[in-house]
Length: 289
Image (cartoon, rainbow, N blue to C red; front, side, top):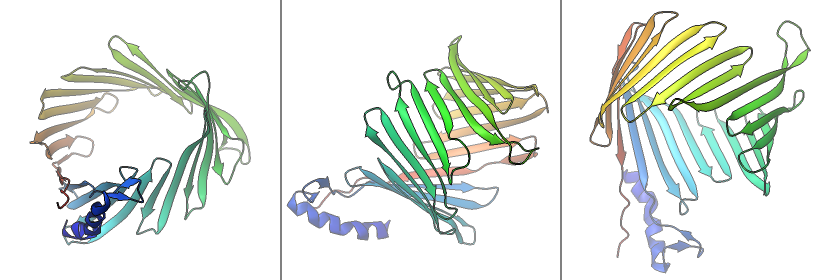
């Protein structure tokens, strides 16, 4: 954190003129959040640091991993604003650009571009009869076939898009997918259809317990998840798959506010694990009087 302090020192000098930059932005020292997690299975640390800039108009985030030898890997930098975001992968020297803004009331434009692969997507979203009903047209870049059409409504969404047949080359057919949600018996029932596969899921949750049975058709794969919160600090999760008789269990304990301990077992891979993580938040530094 010593390096972060040195970078923020010039900001304090600007406070003599009212703490504003260009008479518009508040340039007080930003609050920095630092998170560190350790995975005992792979012996790897995951570190994250983020802060908000320009009077909370932008957010900067840095993340990287390091192993027991101190070797750093997967460094990534993310810069996010209301209308634009940049995700930069340092090792791959690649960036993902995203933008979203309102062209006129009821019409929104969205675009994403993967710089290295030179692939992206553009979309137009229109409000129909209020913001609860939307119609979206999206297309990949470079464009292949007709754009994807999606109709969104309060209970879910339905999409139509062209897909290429695996058995026959250069033949494209229309494919439909969708998702529906509805409240049933104090829980939420979800039906999701995609590529001739239907997933049905029911979720019941109260302050202490969560119960989630689900089934996939036509394979008839049935599973059941159960979560129990004993107190604000202790929670147990259990999941059983009836088609394979595999199961998994996870126990999580929260210490104070910024530390979490986890332990679990997965019967499919016959592996137990106990990674733990910690979070540290730095308080906003006071400006010199």
